[in-house]
Image 1 (cartoon, rainbow, N blue to C red):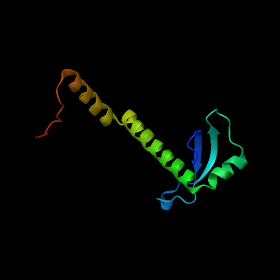
Image 2: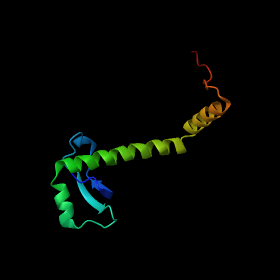
Image 3: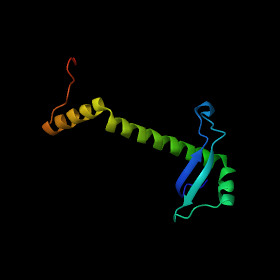
Length: 102
């Protein structure tokens, strides 16, 4: 299994296919030097099920992280919550939302 790739684009990751993702394949990849892999090299990668599964998991994990980051960036309630938490940390206090009973 080749984990020493840089940019990897996996296609056909479909929710109906979870958790095996048998239709997924590596469409594009670069080696550690930044060289784009040729089609025969991509074909060789796509013959190894474990390699495809590894990059599917990496792709999904990255998508989750990006999704969380976007949520915090653009959801005004999340932004306000994190701002209050940060301000409370600076004051050395925990923040309790209104109506919270501990």
